[in-house]
Image (cartoon, rainbow, N blue to C red; front, side):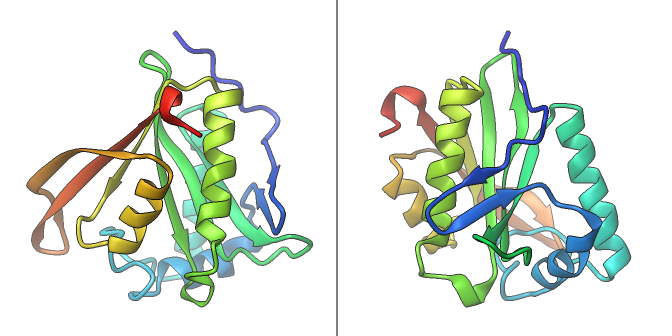
Length: 185
């Protein structure tokens, strides 16, 4: 079984970004991201309705980190505290050396290479530090931009499930993409 070491919280840096732990002082930024229908179009979870819900979400995410179940980084421009997105590993499966990656970014930062930069760093951390064997992403098949990022990073489509996800009164499809450590460049 894989030994997951996440303490202390691993802050990651790229050329332009800092990936950091979320705190309650980020609750307004998280509220703005997670309450925006445009940003959340393909995420398929209920929108946050208040700052208090954002604070509860931050606490839940930090509990997942403390319990080694997942880790969520807030994405900020280097030298700034404002959170412009999030990137995470969830469902860390120590037995099978596997985790699921997910990400979310403010629309003002789309098509600027932000997610690519953050994802490259998080994948390096997952494979080289956590010693994961594989990383998966579950994506709405209509989210062409996200699929493009995954494919650019050598993720392979493994499955397409028809109407397997119920959200807001609709049954939705989902696609599973996966990347093996041996295919990570």
